[in-house]
Length: 175
Image (cartoon, rainbow, N blue to C red; front, side):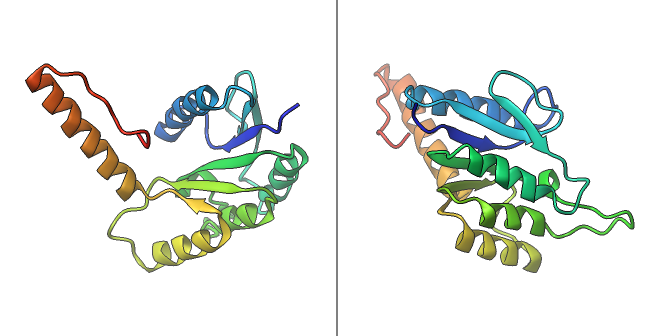
C-alpha cells in the first residue's frame, strides 16, 4: 500500500472558508495522485470518508496527539491549511498562545510538510512576521498566496483574451 497524503485543516460540514477550500484542494490532490489515499486530519466537527477528527484546541497540548496520529500514518507528505483561529489555544483567562501549538505540531511531524498560510499578506505586523519566519524554518514548503494570486491573475488574463478572440485556452502546466 502506498503512503497516504495527509491534509490538516478544518473540513465540512464546518461552515468555514478554509474547510471548503480544503475539500476542493483534497479533490484536486486526489485527482493528481490517483495511487494515493488523501486523508484529512481535522477538528472534531469534520465528517466524511477519510476524514479523521483529531484536533481539539481546548487543551494546551492538543498538538501532541495530532502529531502522533499523523506520524503513525507514515504519510508521503502532509499538506496543512493554516489560519490563526483554527489552531489557537486559548486558556480560561482568554489568553491565546500566539499559535505556538501550531508551530509545535509542525515541528513534531516527521514527514515532508507543505503549509498554506491563508491570512498572510503584505502588511503583517510584528507577531505575524515572527510567526511566518518560524513557520518557514519548520515547514519544508510554505505556499505564498502572493505567488498564487499572480498565477490566478495570469490565468484570468489568458482566459479573458481567449474569450475575446474565440480561441482555446491552454494554461501552462504549473496552473
